[in-house]
Length: 112
Image (cartoon, rainbow, N blue to C red; front, side, top):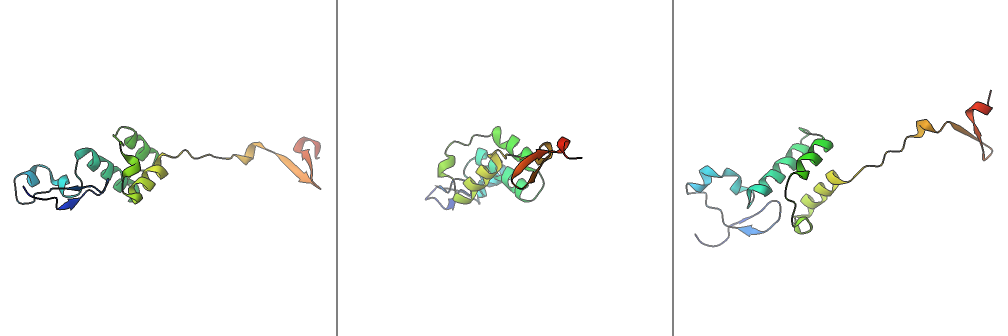
């Protein structure tokens, strides 16, 4: 087999890929990543980046995958996964119908 000749696009670890043997026809993903689980992560991030899936769908897909070792993933991959997984806080100002007049808060019902 020989020495490692590739680096995983997800975790950054070196691995051995053999593009001349039958293995490359059976597992074409092996030219990009070292494991099939990392390939599923790769596909999810690719689809999210290209706009094929939205953040919610990407989060749902990542939740089903093994993200063991996330802290040791390639920085860009780790950052993208964290971006997808972070909960966004939405502030809804439409519920607050108060007007600020001279630093005194007066509800709409008092203004006629």
